[in-house]
Length: 449
Image (cartoon, one colour):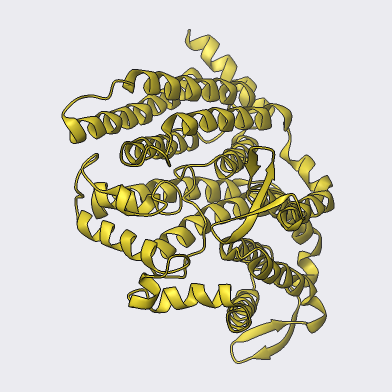
């Protein structure tokens, strides 16, 4: 990486941290007219962490996309600001200092991934190992004495006073498995069978992988009461299957299977049906007043975003304490109340840019495995944002997923930092020029001096 590239990336990183600090100051000014006392501490903490990430990136992935780290820093920093804001209203539930700690661990995981994984193509040799690890992580919460049920979903594993959500890491392992498997089987899966109207259907013998993935996703939905992970994993597989084969028939079959499975599960299992009842009738007095599993949190989130309007109430001047789980599942709604529709659109544009850089990496990748892996990781990030935003706005049923890099919690934050590290590693490989070009660039710089 030339000095000009390094300098430009460092400026963008500093700009992202500056935006976060201005937002942090606005929280204090909005609440009591004073800059928060801990602003310097949080600013130095976030800036120091991102500088460390930048130094590791410059050393071990010098040709990586320079926009990814600043964009992630901005979203992660705004998440810290909102959690600090919510902490002022609900101090027993939210903690910005804890979130800063988990951000530090996330940056460590980001750095370790870049240092240890020098060639991401080594993951292709671990295809089936990654598949077994991913399934094992999904099963862990179902084990007696180990799994924990929180807020109606059995997706946590507790050891002593420490708990993690293994499904967040399972999605990474399973995307690696999907990429390796589809590279090996894409020629077979791309074969066409009978034609129905304008769609070439796959052969019946090739439906096995889709049916197995569908059974696993429905199992997660029914046994762990986790609609979010179920939708995320099945959607990721179908998207990667389409990338590998370029056949829309797989998308058509996948949509039908998931809708059919969700409908049957909703009829047979009350906890699944309750999700759809809340989605279809959020304003029902019976559902709204239900102590648990009702539409109270959904409606409060909608009321909050509605009161924010176009420009928002202003940081520090909303009422996030009136929105249940505003620090985790509904942080997007709390952000919409104080930043308004304009702020939410800007935030979604930042997410869109991160996904776009990931897809750009997939296009530029030089081998099929890298294309599928980069495309799959980019898709699950975009899909997760769509699922949480769709749930909070009542476009789709609530799923229990959290907003990437913003919601309070450690498991999702660590998994997403590892995801970014994988994208950065593949970006470095895709953008790295041939050795002769690097040598010529070095000679040119010497002569210019």
